[in-house]
Length: 270
Ligand code: ADP
Image (cartoon, rainbow, N blue to C red):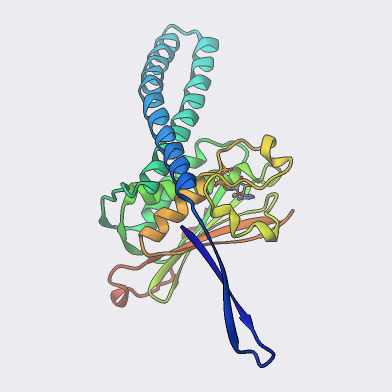
């Protein structure tokens, strides 16, 4: 049952009565569970054929390239790119079911965050000719967490920054110390997000409505998954954005051995 209560006050501001409603949400919960189960099964079933398709595509691409057929090899390269997108979407759906069923497992280790950022930036930079990703990184920052999952957060935020700033080619990635935390922020100079939507963008399947629904493809899961991962690492995530000016998404992570770290004049600008 979902119970909602509201106090009723007298003239002196004292509560004289409580007014409430109780709604049976068993059916609603059951449907939600069924939906999650369906998403889980469907994405799991999609994963195997897509993985095989990817292997065949790469094999053919290599073959055509070796034979000197540039056109066929280029088309297969594009196919491989689309299959990567599909794999990413399936992975997101599988992650959602893991989050919802409490089955998300992290493989934790202690690692240096800026090195991970550097790797992911380099990887993402290779996928775009339209944008240049600049870095302004702090002194080395040791964190404890799942390196792959945190890498996934960075990929999600960088991909969004590129996707939602078609007219502006600059992306800025910064890290900075804040108390016992290291804050990473990814800034773009793109379309921005209306103020009233700032909290909603972290909800599951939420996409800012309007033209953007068809212009920019996506499932509305990247920020939800990123927020869940960050929260599970005892950090927080937030957004600063202005329509037409751009967006900065930041997240904090607790520093490992925070008391031993000293900020130095280390900057790595690209
Ligand atoms: P997706 O991009 O797949 O829709 P996300 O969960 O990553 O899903 O983002 C949710 C919504 O938030 C997006 O649909 C988009 O409207 C908005 N959004 C996210 N990042 C940005 C950004 N950098 N600039 C503008 N809008 C953004």
